[in-house]
Image (tube, rainbow, N blue to C red; front, side, top):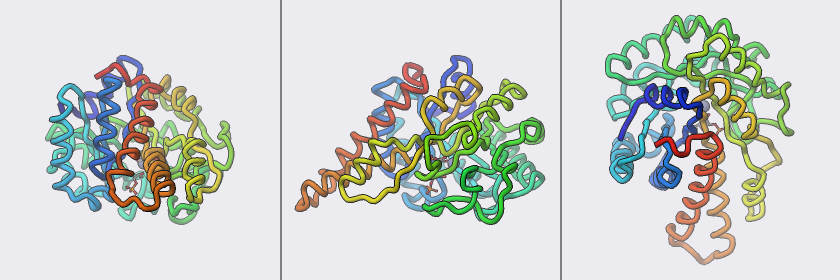
Length: 328
Ligand code: G3H
Ligand code: 13P
Ligand code: ZN
């Protein structure tokens, strides 16, 4: 059945677990996530970005979600918009059946330029008003996501914020977080503590200087009832880097967010953990392997079936590691 983010995260808070929010762009990713949820009896957050909606088409995505919910009647499914950039993107997602939207007002509409507090709280508050009329949940973001190590700027894979971002902006100010929740009434709050999107987050295993989990603890102390969200939470497993590179890929050595750090976050109010890159890597590694070992193969099912299996395995691991398993 379809549920809202608020319903799911309230349950997660009550029972002390976290929920991975997996990005989805196509049927294969949807099937893999749902099969992993079924095998581990986990509730699910499926999230689609603006890019995913443009790629798959809103109608296809909406009917795909209907199908996934019908195939797995016992799995609670929250359908969430990832990084909405204005009111219209959020409202159209709701029209297509999303039960939750993120209004990311930490950045301007271009999704790159850091925005000021008044812009962020204004636009997020307006989306909360509209969404709550329809019983839809809203995630907001306070603080700018970006690498403390690289100063938040453009990263090797093209992710990253535009222009100069101060060290301060890359770490959510706990006091501003309290004000933001008061001003906007969001259901969940994404915070910045040094993670960034994509595969190239850290140049070595992160320590407290570049991954500031203490910021999460401080925010949780001041907002004990707020559901916190960690973006950029792929762990970028070394095994997946190795598979990709073994079969002709060219990923440079890199580190993601260690699962233990996420588990530490879950003890301090983190309820939603956004993961896209790890699944992209799982799919790509498996596809590269099949095509490298069988260069004459051209039936897509021959590489997409193992790709789905690799993604299903990764999703199952996260459901188990975050304590989501058994809560469907
Ligand atoms: O925000 C980052 C997510 O990984 C979604 O990425 O905008 O390329 O679909 P995307
Ligand atoms: P990753 O790139 O670390 O998977 O983060 C995804 C994300 O935050 C989507 O909003
Ligand atoms: Zn994100």
